[in-house]
Image 1: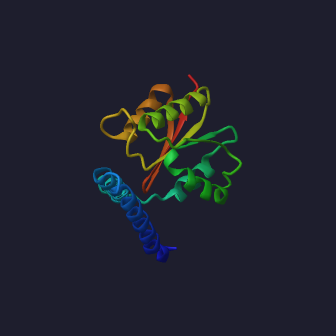
Image 2: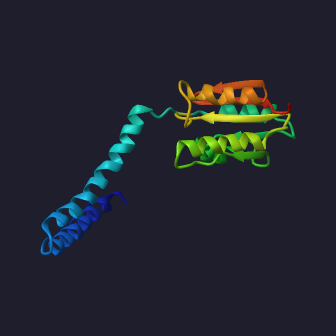
Image 3: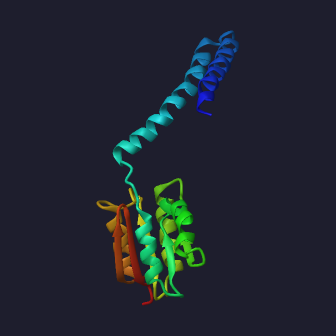
Length: 182
């Protein structure tokens, strides 16, 4: 598929050239604007992703020790909350540790940071009253309205709603067990 990329660029260039030639007969300024906008989008999107990785570099996550710890310590009534950035990783490794049958609440990825934070709040409210709730966090780069360490923001929020019973850390992944029963 990578070899098709130049062909796709040639098709895009030819299509834009054709549109430019049609619109240039009517108005040259509009033709130039419509010709340049798609080119800027094609340059801006990869540049934005590159900048995001530059600002917050990718940290390798080692989910296996965390899932092994949960599998060893988990009780039947436990619930596992998975932060939205690692849903796919959890889904992939959970069957290897017998966690596919566990009660799991997956965070949902949202377009806005504020909506992602609200989804986390809703998830915690759903788990209110649970004696044992595991929270798995990884790749926490933002939280919408927090300042400082985003991971600390989430744990402070959980500390206000319950009591931390246990914690475990692996490379790029943090695990917390909370009692959310007041």
